Length: 92
Image 1 (cartoon, helix red, strand yellow):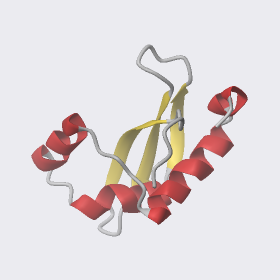
Image 2 (cartoon, helix red, strand yellow):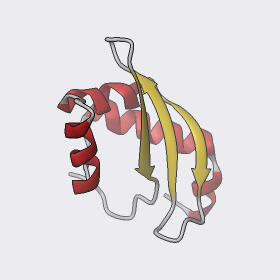
Image 3 (cartoon, helix red, strand yellow):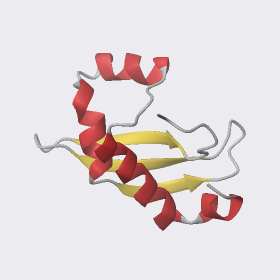
């Protein structure tokens, strides 16, 4: 992903949705702990990403570019997910 794409919310959202569809996700320890605390099943994050909308973009965040997305799962529940948007490391 090139630097200009970090500000293009459409590019970011398409990329995140594609990763959700492909199951190419990496969950941090913090995110996993929150999923356990809030009783969020493993596949729910992937499901939510597939139909998500981008709420906020943080291309200049101090820890690296990221964004906040929201997606709904089949049960009707909405999940808010913070995602890294710097794809320097490719997932296999």
